[in-house]
Length: 124
Image 1 (cartoon, rainbow, N blue to C red):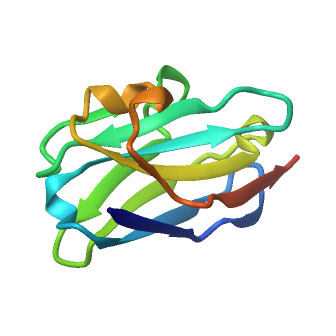
Image 2: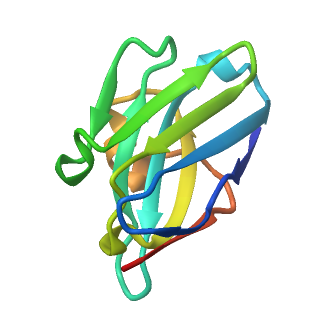
Image 3: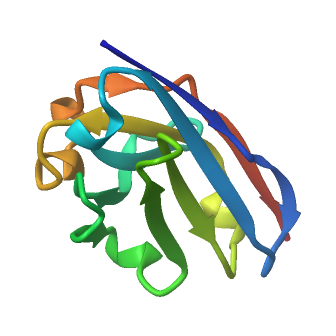
């Protein structure tokens, strides 16, 4: 089992930045690939970014490439999502997730563990 707790969400103006954090506890953090997803009202949960156990491999959704950066610190049991150049359409609840394989974490149905989510609101 692993428990995931996100933080760092909030209200920001368009063009601004936020850094989300996801702290993990339970099983060895470095044994999991980690990912970020988001869900806007009335929409399905969508993939944002994923990172391998070592941090050496990352994936991004096309609309986030160049604006978002996923990273992890295995010594701190934490994964981060740095979000720059935010747009109103980035408004959503952001969730972190854990799974066995980074390639699987592009599909929300293949994640094994989820955090409770953190709200990100981008005003125009």
